[in-house]
Length: 266
Image (cartoon, rainbow, N blue to C red; front, side, top):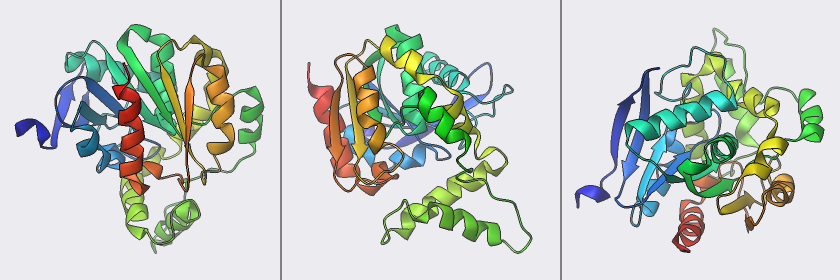
């Protein structure tokens, strides 16, 4: 069937083109990736969710093959890019699934544009409040490496992420590095945007039914799962055993099932 095929496209907006991939038909579900990934993070998840929904994964503006914003990157700027994509695709209302930085963007959309959000799934989303922002000020950059003629920066980039990835999945790290190299000049922009975003002011504004997911082996998000869930009235939680930072592409079947089960509830 035509709707079961993965298709890629570009949405023309007033600011530039937004790249996305889509599978399936029916109610829309928009998936937002972590920094500095692209839609590719959901490559295996899209067809699974696309069996029941119109699953769409976009490249956040500033990343992947989407346009580079003229303004300095921020969660608000990324959220505006999402709204532009929805407008071009004539989607008035959608469910949102966000992983890491994508989850923070989803929080902003649900808080600032509540009429556009049906349901909300926040995956491995760090809850950055005043206390956490203080800790992050002294945390070194995660992915920023200095370009070197001998290419050793590639090894450094790989090794910085290696501890957060399964030892037997170099393919996942390869996909990460490919995405990271595309935005090497602004590779930390998404992380800095998360650090500056006052989530404690926005999360309580969320009215959409919300599911908070976290992998038990993700040191950045798992300890913050309950503080995030407690800040959103009526939210539910699911911990995925063994889930690491790349949980979406590490265990796509388990991830997709949890998302679909939540979306299926009336």
